[in-house]
Length: 314
Image (tube, rainbow, N blue to C red; front, side):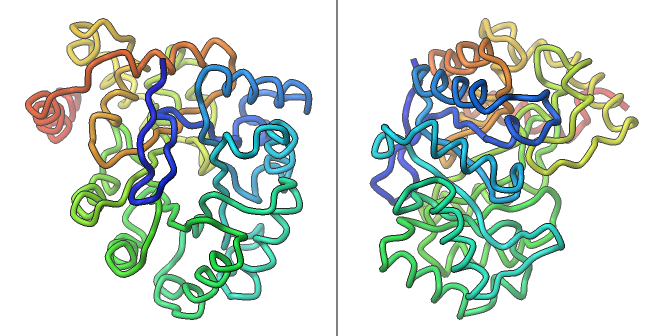
């Protein structure tokens, strides 16, 4: 049975496993009819998942529309998170663009409020713009958003700016890219989150599919919500590392894909992890992760050391 964790200092509690709606509308994980997508979202809710993450870019707004239809009768029972700032042509974090994006998202989801609004890969100029943060506060005062936070891309871009924003503003959630095989730069946010009692949501827990049950199929897809195809050389090396990780999951009676999630959930600042969900059978597999004990600090320390050594794979 899924456990629930507080979203930072908010009163919200989110399921340890969240659902990123990008899998249902990008076309990269198969084609879903609207009815099929809504059915899978509702089955996810029945499995205990109450946290759903989306972006206006997911299916050019289709992700938000499907999410709104799936939970029109359960709005108070789910936590909906969407994003602002990224456009098809790049980015626009101006106050006017942010406000319009929020209004459009509200209309597509058919809801009067967004639980958690995230700045989507903000750069230094955006993070340092007082007018942007003032706009977010205004939107919260108006009741259109309950909380706001950051969604950060893979790699070091925005690392320093994001850590400054974490300490300066009352953020509800920081979403980062992080997994067993790709621990930098995401790991650098955990100490800050612990220091200021903010929480993290983690995407890409299966490293673009390498740590899933069928990596031969999953690694043919882009790396999670970032929609960047994995380099074949990286995939080959990562697959070798993944095959050497039986010592992480077998003693605990977990599959590799479950252990990849439990590894992340063993970090006390993590509120929820967002695996790619595109099949009904994944719901039970991922929900069962809550039934296993967390990795101990000693075990996490050993994993960190082995990561530094490349898990014994050149």
